[in-house]
Length: 134
Image 1 (cartoon, rainbow, N blue to C red):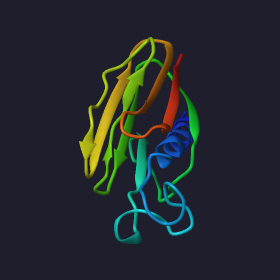
Image 2 (image 1 turned 180 degrees about the vertical axis):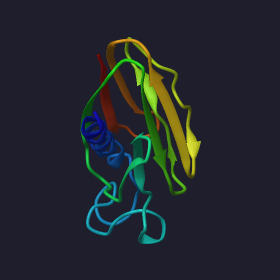
Image 3 (image 1 turned 90 degrees about the vertical axis):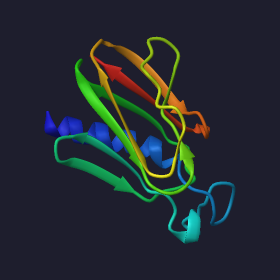
Image 4 (image 1 turned 30 degrees about the vertical axis):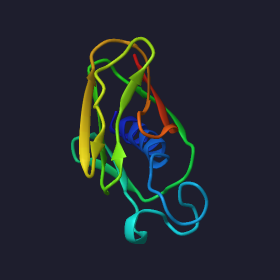
């Protein structure tokens, strides 16, 4: 189960990477690494006790599909000064984070089976994902 949780975290992280910083080349970073002062915000997902994934990727459009067991928890976290959010879209839904500027975390427990869609209210299609709860 830990391996599965780790994979879920990595895939979720890929979706957050698309909600990365501005800067570098192109619209949302790219070659220069993006972000304030060249560092860029770093998105990370904690997928379970002691399991954390961190990435500095910016400017990609990644769609994640994560599968977890009913009762499972997903935590999104990010650093930097740019605003981000985790916003449930569609039905079934979960409580959205609202927009947070700067570093932040947001945790959701999914007690009921279903397919949950989300995006970033600030960056829209640059950060999207799906969580399948079985």
